[in-house]
Length: 250
Image (cartoon, helix red, strand yellow):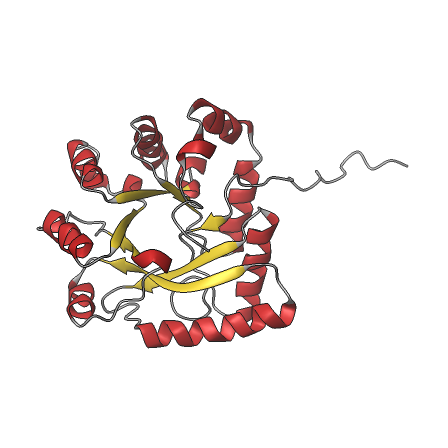
């Protein structure tokens, strides 16, 4: 007898780029992956979506995750060994998502940074209010040879009624990285609408998974297999506008 309640087949969906610039896959250093087995499972999900290079951008924040280049490199070495032992066709890179706070100031002034290849550095603004002097800080970073990326600008609510700040920061050569999860609706209606506005205004340079766990992986996989995603990519010609792969020389 046929099973009329047969499960739907898994969505076969691939991203149009191969470099994830924002993920929390390093084991045991923040509230992303908690152990190596979970990290490997997340990496397999990345591979399944067409990703071949992953920036491991673990949180660096005051009090909660006061990571250093040493703690992050140690976790990276453990995961890299496991990736090699499993023979996974993916390359990982140690880096961080730096919350702009007092711990960032201390680490930055001491030169304790772990940027991505090409001195790209992922920065997370406060969710409460914009940092005073952020424009000068971004300029100073660039003078020192760093290339700042602002993580998920669509999630900073204090910009929603001050959209000119988006344009000011972006025009100052700060790249913007939008979360696919925001487009999926995971962070709410306002974040999704703002993400779409940023794309429409040509203020989105990169997309990222911001993957913390396998539930995030599942949601992303389902979304990139949806009609909404395909329409978005076609309407805004995202494969030609998103620079995830072009920003790195592997």
